[in-house]
Length: 283
Image (cartoon, rainbow, N blue to C red):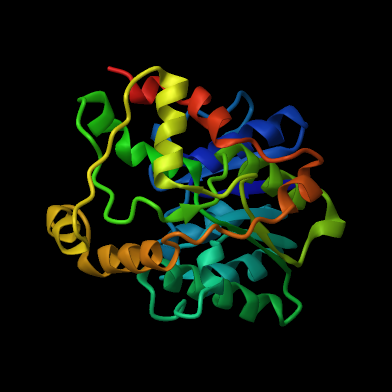
């Protein structure tokens, strides 16, 4: 079996490449800029820009399975080229946000939902099996606070008591490895969560304890926060984040046992993630 891993500069994909290599599974690392990749020894690289269908055929040549990032723009074209190439299985890195009532109009969820639908439309013809991985809040989202904390500045939290289910990127990669290498797991949708529902203040407290550095925060109004991010965040995305945080304010996130079902071990805690990324939060 040969597995094409798209987005190989990403944390999940690069971890997955290591898992496949360690297991002796042939993998191909794909990226828009493959020269920037440093894959495990013996892993070939290939250019695959999910925004450029002209790169799909060469990347898919000789591939049996794909780990696919949810780029909706040409997801249908990718699925069609995967079918033509004889791909048997595609695992999509989606998001649990697709299950929200406003998923079709929410800027965060809509692209994932569109990618799922495009992939499923082709899979439903019998072309290949499609598996959807739907993680909740990535623990790596906490890296958005790293610059401020390193500089001794408190992050701005318009909804400090908004809950999430932070999941370690390695747990997502191990879940992907499981569904890619175990045929009986194919063809389903899996909601992946971390082992704890934590609000932002609890996550910052854990970071403070693990790093040994203070982790204070400020509480701007939603309007103030939105104004502060206008230079680097599209308005629709900022609105989607505010809507998500408001809907989870004071409401613990339901957890699943899916990571353990797929990998055989409980998901890693946020404290474990913080310990793995301590350097990012220290000067």
